[in-house]
Length: 217
Image 1 (cartoon, helix red, strand yellow):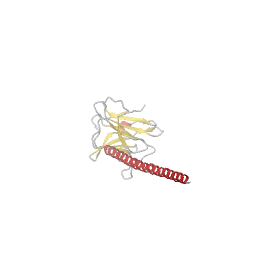
Image 2 (cartoon, helix red, strand yellow; image 1 turned 180 degrees about the horizontal axis):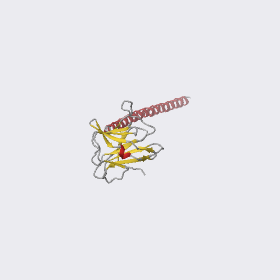
Image 3 (tube, helix red, strand yellow; image 1 turned 180 degrees about the vertical axis):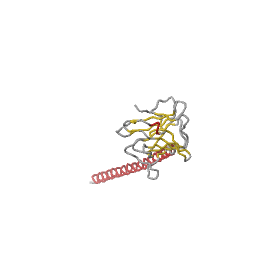
Image 4 (cartoon, one colour; image 1 turned 90 degrees about the horizontal axis):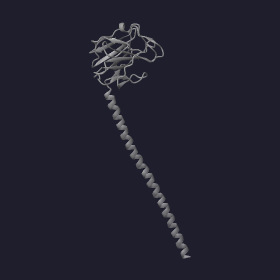
């Protein structure tokens, strides 16, 4: 009888030990998961800070290249009859001359007759590409139109006078045939190795990229 009682007590102790072990294991696992979660949270926070810092750095790097938003005061409007945008600007270097590239994002051929591009420097606006140079020119649907200076080694659709220069701290303004300001871009220091390139046709943002001049065909 005493042996049976001792065996029962021993079995109870074993069960208690097993229960204690399972509870301890459960607590350890949960605690490890919490620690792991906290650790991953710290890592994610650091990664987020790095991404934000990188974005801020890129934003700072590209802060000199902006698009002038349309508004009623300066009569900058998007005209369905003249949806042309400035797609790329390059200041030129020893290997590639400066150029201005415009783009037709519409499914229609657009006449450039009467259009012009003007440059603003020190608040003074002067004609950079006159309407005469756009005479009888058409830009095809979803196509580019390339402009560069005269006597350059780059084959373009039209040319601006060789004495004209793209300079630092300038703005280019595209005017429609109706003399309405339809697109504009301004910059601080004009890079020599990269162009100021439009990100896409649905946004007004520009970025730095390798120059890729494209003319109409």
